[in-house]
Length: 151
Image (cartoon, helix red, strand yellow):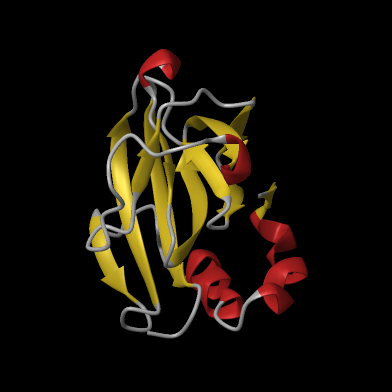
């Protein structure tokens, strides 16, 4: 897992062939005014999901993980309270993995909680089980989905 400011994005370009393009979208697009929903950037290999709304109370936050995609979660406005736990410490999922939605959920609580303010991003790899939107504050954010392997 990575937590950093968007101004430092170039430090992470070498971690994945599509990271440069993903971060360019965050730096160049008018993400504050783009409509919510899915925005394709490179087909199924790279796309953005813009959302805006309140989250849930931390005790109700679900721990989730993905297999096919890396998440870059960038906060446009508000402060997203997130939880984290390494996959190896999570045990069995609460329900079967959904390949269509690329998500599965775990009944564990985070080992770490942290705040992600506007202008910061997180990178969650498939081994990073995370609980985003663990706040009832209204958050506007972009979740970039980057295929671990080209589709």
